[in-house]
Length: 120
Image 1 (cartoon, rainbow, N blue to C red):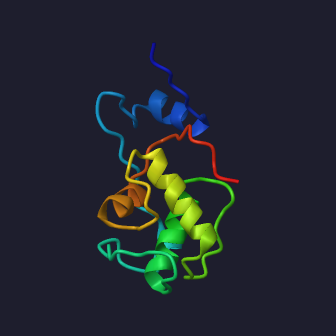
Image 2 (cartoon, rainbow, N blue to C red; image 1 turned 180 degrees about the horizontal axis):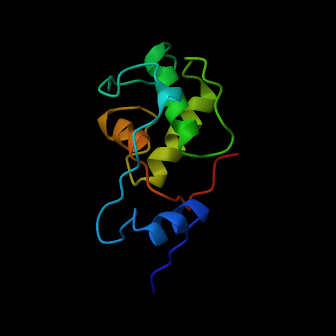
């Protein structure tokens, strides 16, 4: 049995024909709210780092879900680490807390839904 869970946006996209279930689903690129770096910026980031790349990752993680929302402060602290690990788990990636090429890809093109509970 296939389980399909759609929110209001997914239902609208399906009925409008904008979303097809026949192939991989790619999210639209982040809007101007996440313009701390170029979308081509994909440097590896990890706990303790700071800067515009961290702001970009924090902002993208907020655009695509998960509660609580991160403060976009450019500091890769404990909250950012937990959120990155949650995102990695949701997308079947190695859960290591490092924002590398695969994690950047899912930040820009996330899955539509995640059934992993957010860490407390």
